[in-house]
Image (cartoon, rainbow, N blue to C red):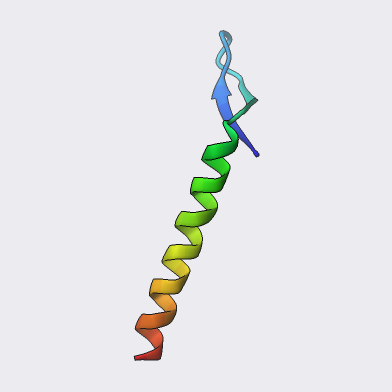
Amino acid sequence: MTKETRDATGNWVGAPVAAQTETDLENAILTKARQLNLQNAG
């Protein structure tokens, strides 16, 4: 996973992110999906 940041000239360039960030993002998405699933089931 990468994120986009601006360099000194204002161009967007890919930048690495911490491994924990990727895990946290995945967990947040899965948690929200579970919440939506429970709302739609009830």
